[in-house]
Image 1: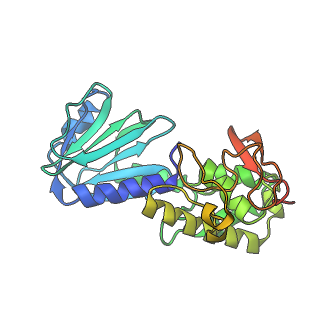
Image 2: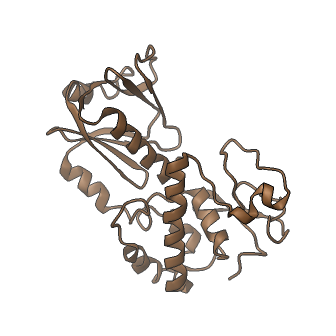
Amino acid sequence: MPEGHTIHRLAEDHLERFAGRETAVSSPQGRFADSAALLDGRVLDAVDAHGKHLFLGFRDSGWIHIHLGLFGKYALGPAPAPAAGDTVRLRLANDAWYSDLRGPTVCAWVTDAEKAAIGDRLGPDPLRPGDDPDRAWARISRSRTTVAALLMDQKVVAGVGNVYRAEVLFRHGIDPYRLGKDLTRAEWDALWADLVLLMREGVRNNRIDTVRDEHLPEAMGRPPRVDDHGGEVYVYRRAHQPCHLCGTEVRTAGLAARNLFWCPGCQTR
């Protein structure tokens, strides 16, 4: 499932390519056809991203709410758009650009009030300026749930997925099984600040890199990572390989319906 930086990058891409222009809206697949017909030819004048939710706003006409889920994919490119197959749920097009959405969990037209209600259910997002980490801390500091599970709970922190969860805990030496109530305020402040930094870099580079300069392959004389996800990481999808820092075998286990990765040598309770 795409993490929050991907959704914020999509928001920026749509803002740059479509904002302020009349936009052709269609649903070649047909599952969004009725709403597309209402929005077709209107001006797209706003975009918003909150966690893993993308909103495309049309002047005086509400928003398209998109959640990619596990299988959703976007294709953006210059006009003219290619012939659309029967898998394109939503197509936006103008005289310069097109975007095609396939396989999302959610693609729905919503009102301002409905959009606000969705946002109210989400925790603070490290990529949204002004979002208050104290809201997350209020829940984390009282919780007997593991910090690893809390970071993946979108009602607690919005936008953090499996990669950022594993990597930020490693970067701060925190055992993923530590309970939220046992986390100190200083540790939470450092985790939040690091998520802001890492996820902003993710938006800028359109990929996840979490390894500090002194631990990069060229600095350590090790081979670079080869993985479809790209980017240099410490523990994510490195189960049974030696930790870059201490050499301990990276472990994996299921937690909150996802695979957790951590180094028991570097991440202590």
